[in-house]
Length: 119
Length: 114
Image (tube, rainbow over the protein chains, first blue to last red):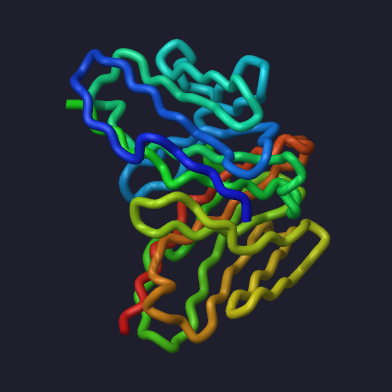
């Protein structure tokens, strides 16, 4: 299957700082990338859909000014958590879709996730 | 928003036994997929079943889909300790087109004891 990487795998920051998470599709060009948030022992919550070259589409209740998404190329999307607070501590997962490698309709390829801890 | 409900929330079995997880959803779908997540990791795609299919097999996995009841089941036969993970169903809602958008269920945590 296609490979998606995320960087960093974990990050600890102080309250009020901004954190950038990168999501890369390593061996294919992803037309769409998705960003999810997952709290312990819970399911994935879709935060936003990111299409290359256009503004991200945010799910209801997700603050677009707090979670900035940039999809500058077909292989890279970034999520910036601005002015992070302890309640933003979570596991953030990206996935990539498209580019001819989604042999199954709507199959997404997931990154390994980034664990954010805000002190 | 979450649209899938899964049961049981947690399942503990002995190695060699079969594990069955169920998923229900609310809206009409194009397809339903099952994913696996090891603790603290990303998700791995297991199997996809289209809305016009009723059953699908892949190795030790068997998935059924009942669109009239808006439900699906995942059966893992002859379980192994390495199958210990969380399992999520995800649906591609009709109207999502070719966007790739998926809605995930709550997940079932499976523990297989050696």
